[in-house]
Length: 262
Image (cartoon, rainbow, N blue to C red; front, side, top):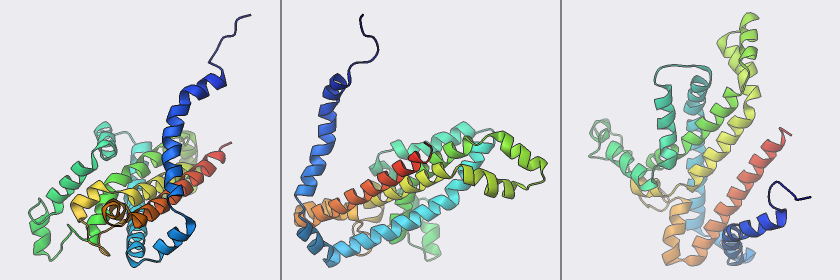
């Protein structure tokens, strides 16, 4: 009798092997190029510690800002229907497909000294471009959509019957949100937080254009990796390994969250 269905696993694996190798081999090469002793020595360098501390601090601030503004937006989009909703969804998705250089230029033309908001801000004694605030805004611009979209998916999956039942029992909108919607949608929210933080941590193009490269002030880890490639390869590779380790940790967290559904 002739077998039907998909190809055998061995055949599928052979077809997928080139792509798997393309992803795996460069990562192995990166790890091989950084012996543990070299990594420890590089972590002790002042420039590396500066870039690491700045990246961790700004990415944490970015994630908190994204959570503060993105979660209410996700609630609005998930539980309400209104005119302009599709346009708003498109605008939220736009930074995820926009080239980073375009995002950086747009931010510079908005907050730079000669930008749209630059002169009014300068009149108030506020400078944004080429400061740590520029780093945070660049990270926020490119990473906040990940929080909104993932939280939106989690919140939209909550049955409306639960919300209606809570309303019949006399619960306020805030109580319904806090006691029903958020606890049920927590996986989507946690996924959004993790992806937002990792995307902010790895942001490079928009940050370089909008915040520049000032060691100890705006030089994040991705920028230090790029510039260190030409100046100090060992330092660049060490920072790259740190970013790789953080990425693996984030993926492990997300997979653990997914297993909670099983």
